[in-house]
Amino acid sequence: MPPNLQIAPNLSNVPGFLTTMGSLTRLLLSNNHLSGILPFFKPFAVVDIYGNKDLINSPITHTSTSPTNNTSRNKNISVPLGVLIAVTSVVFGVTVAILLKLLERRFLLIQLSIILH
Image 1 (cartoon, rainbow, N blue to C red):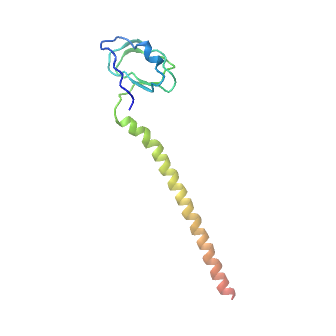
Image 2 (spheres, rainbow, N blue to C red):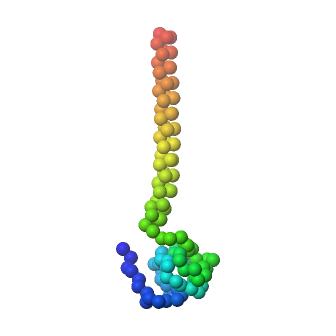
Image 3 (cartoon, rainbow, N blue to C red):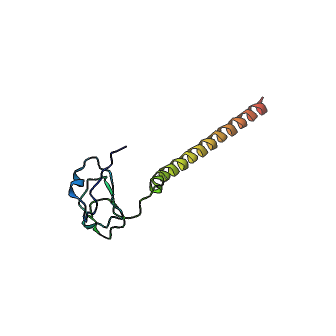
């Protein structure tokens, strides 16, 4: 588990040193009454700014303005899982259809050989 970072309370803007943290992937700033311009964060760092109406979003930083909760992680998993299930179902269905066609053809060939003999 990544270490927790505590920042002094009662800040009015986002500290610039946070942008230099190389391993930062998600920063939760929701409902902290922050103001000013959100600094640029490295690509792939998601910054949650929900509830900070006076905070101006940098157009380059990937931000989330919706409430953060535990179900957001589940939503991220459910889409690829649904696609995987759908693809698996299609592959299974096509495989069954091919096998049935092969069995039907073999059955017809057996009947034909009985008739010819």
